[in-house]
Image (cartoon, rainbow, N blue to C red; front, side, top):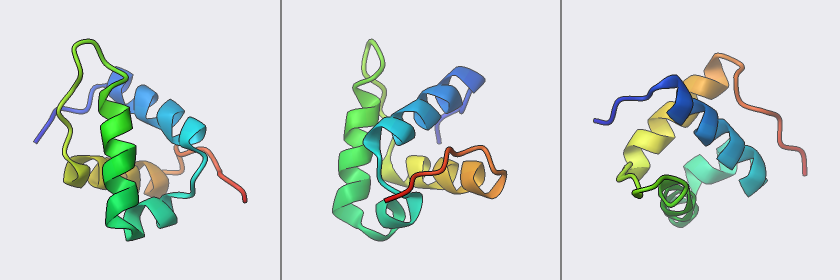
Length: 73
């Protein structure tokens, strides 16, 4: 499992906001979660190797703590 530093969490929140898809949709759709994770990994130099499971877990933690921005459609 990857260590989630504050910088990585901030990047995840920003990427989530830019991806513009509610977390429920991302977490329910395996292909969407893989797309989200893949594009998130490319935000780092060199690219990170977060797994969809790691990203899903962190998204849930951030959502439960109220730290994810609201996405409205």
